[in-house]
Image (tube, rainbow, N blue to C red; front, side, top):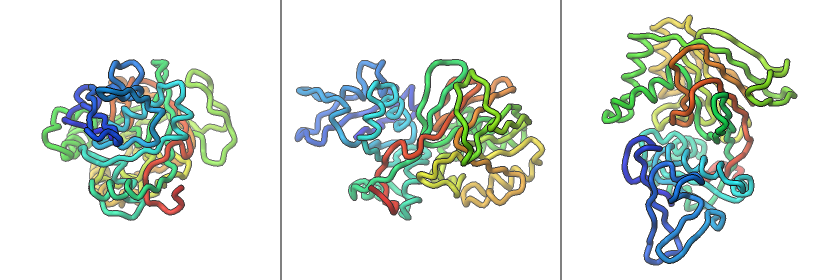
Length: 334
């Protein structure tokens, strides 16, 4: 199990402890945040105790106890390895929500028809059933680095609420609500971008981000307020942002609100996020696709992937259907 020991930004302040279930003395090692990749001295690739060394390839499951940030670090660590493909086919993942938002933990319990809570997640893991979860592969124009994602990507208002509200972290989850009122209603900001996507059931290639898009892709250029790409039903334990999302439907569900939306309509929409009723609002567009490219035309905007700040600029992603297996009680588990 990998356990977050203290709060803060997942990369800068996270502490992780590795436990070997076969170790009678329950010994472990501690690594700083970011230790899930190959470049760190204490990392997920070579978990060790005082008297033995075990590579992650010797394990069959990883259980994360913390928020979505710790799982993001784990995914990037696996992604950085040469044997990533083999590991993703072999490893089973589980998460016990002990962080601030816990979007994936909530989504897995929701799909399983269970109530939300750490004990419910633990019981679900102990049952041993797993189901495939769609993940996504991301590439950016301003770096050669690529990412694996399992939760959401946001740009515009939602990204600002998540990242710029860090100064109010001591308030807990309500910090995002406060920032939404400030940035979306009081001091409103518009975000211009060129957005292209590949509709479902369309035969086409997914080019590299520096290449031209095939004619089968659809392109929109406009001023936006919300651009929110959803892989899961809940971005947070109290935010039912994408009721239509399934564990392995093979799709991105992209929520878009354009700048033509009034402040009142936006406020009413945000107030309905907890129940999922925002989906019925006329100013909200939902676009399903299997791949997309976003080219920001606005300065000083954030790319927010799974709740983590990544490099700014043009970004492109495609779905990896059933790319990871998570402990879940959903019907059809393997």
